[in-house]
Figure (cartoon, rainbow over the protein chains, first blue to last red):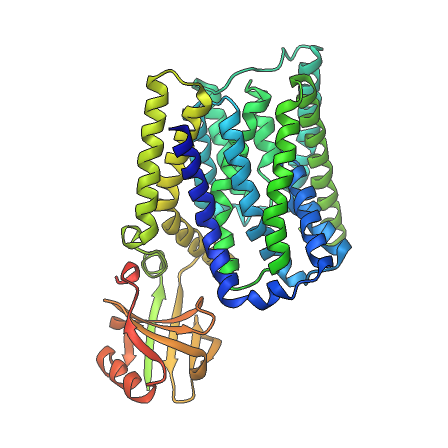
Length: 296
Length: 179
């Protein structure tokens, strides 16, 4: 039975890949064959590093874009498509291995996944009107005390209690988590990552640190393939970098999974606090840059 | 020659962009995944297996239901609402398609938006209530509502297309989009 379920998850993974393989086979074979070693090297390096960081909760888009610019092996116009299509596979892989290796209440997972989808699809036209920079500043600022609170909880200092060990939520806590996941799902439409805020929400409501991972990874895995289909259809992706990102990304995810599941809880929560602070920094610095350019 | 004019509403966009999910072959794959996921979830709960395996069943059943049934419609609906909010001040927009000898001109809210040359079109597809002229990139297409011809009519347009542009392949639209 377990094997059957694993096979089915593999089918889901393969299903997403069929579109990519068919498109490459039909239309992009020359590009695949003509790729240089430098391109493959860059593609795998970016895939492994970015998706390692992604699994830890840092997100992969910013580091990938930074490295693409650094290696200078890809046209800028193909970057969004390459990121979307290439990262879809590692994200599904992430959701798969964390769901099968971490204890989590299935009802809690269902509620959180539905809410992320409802937020992303139901509130898209509303959030696109919101001032992006103000949200960046608000989220970036709030993540600093959240990280501090989590650190205090982890060390048993102050009036915040100790870290949670729940594998799911119920009652008012579930309602709060669900409502916030709708918001995080909606904010994905204007370029805000869901990982860090979803992780902070779950942790503060008393969910076990490891259990947070399948929650935010599954939420993203359900939302991501939407864009990939469009990019595959319009051929707006770089073939070697997409393939490298997809394959190298899964390797990066696997390494990070070993790190996350192998870490003692104390260090895992410290790691999460660092991720929250890093996210805060990226949000605030992006807001500052856009403000300097006069973008609201 | 022929002019087709209609208001792009949420209902119309959903109708044209979202397929009938039960007509897509992948739907039956999702049905199997949903059945296996739900069965696995119930089975693991019943035998007292660890939560992680119950979660796998729950995740599978969610993904199958979400991707197999709701996803295409949700995606089309979102695309329409975001487009309307970003480009048309939250209002529905009017589309006017002018079929001319040389090309096809597209007007949105009475302003010229795009020209499509006949050589860029590859397929002329017919559905119950509309025609679709598919371009080479297979993504964009010129849509014509059969009931919204303000110059010419649906049957004479079809006749004209078959006579004047035999190089554009004519056929019925994919059954999933035949609305």
